[in-house]
Image (tube, rainbow, N blue to C red; front, side):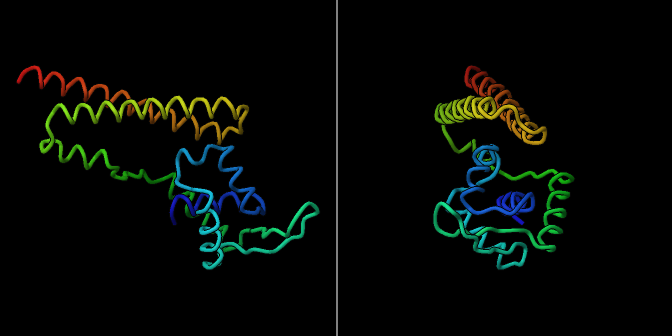
Length: 178
């Protein structure tokens, strides 16, 4: 199960929801900071989870507008969520982001260009950190588990910033020697 599928399934398992409500919760909880869920992918994921028998949808009339399809978790969905959550909590995931690919091929790039690229990476991380901190502040107070999600993301970004800064300095020193 993908992170996005697990995230959608978790929201539905909390309580039955419709797609637009899920999008708002994803935004409020800052879930786009750690998983790739666009507004349009929510409906794709809902259909996929429904086909797999993990959720079921039912049209419900509303007083203010057209009927909405509200999704709830099935027994299989609840079991799949528990399995997915335990896996996520127990297994470090070492995805190899593009940075790893760039580092593996660093000798192929002129040093000045590589340094410029790494500085852009650092600046993007810094911008991301500022954005995350602002989203975190906007949402407070938060339930402890949502606060922990923001805290983890912020800590990981800060650690990566420290690493990138150190690596840039190391490359600059190597350039000075040559």
